[in-house]
Image (cartoon, rainbow, N blue to C red; front, side):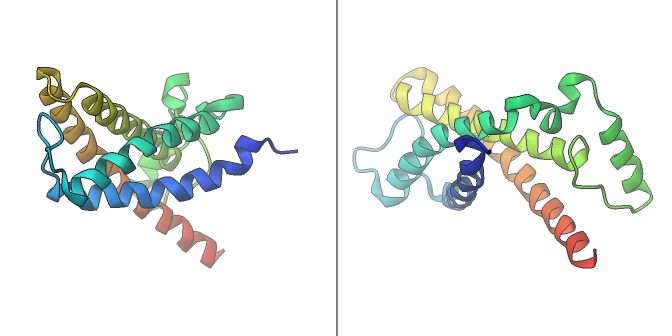
Length: 171
């Protein structure tokens, strides 16, 4: 029987995906530097609220993805198991799509995406807690870089999922 966490894993993904898309899409219109403005406006306020909600969701989702040895699927490089990633990269040079099964390039990409989201959520939350101080400016810079990395990894994840769907339709 599946545990409650395993059953809600899909729900967590379904909640995180639109939240992340909203946060990325709204970010060009954010007007926060050292602190939340006195009159934050809808965009700033919604970015903070959705961002703060994202942290516990990503922590739960990360836990769901690493428990019972699943961490080896998403973070094979931590276990020194890079053969699947090497095989998938070599296959790409021959224009072969990587397999979506665990331990390969696509799974490692998902793991990196999850880590990037965690860094974005943590730095955003710390910025909110420390806003008004000098540390907030540095956290904002790290948050912005992590968000850019997350955005690129999210784009790669969408491509990988699309390729997987092509395999399912053909299969």
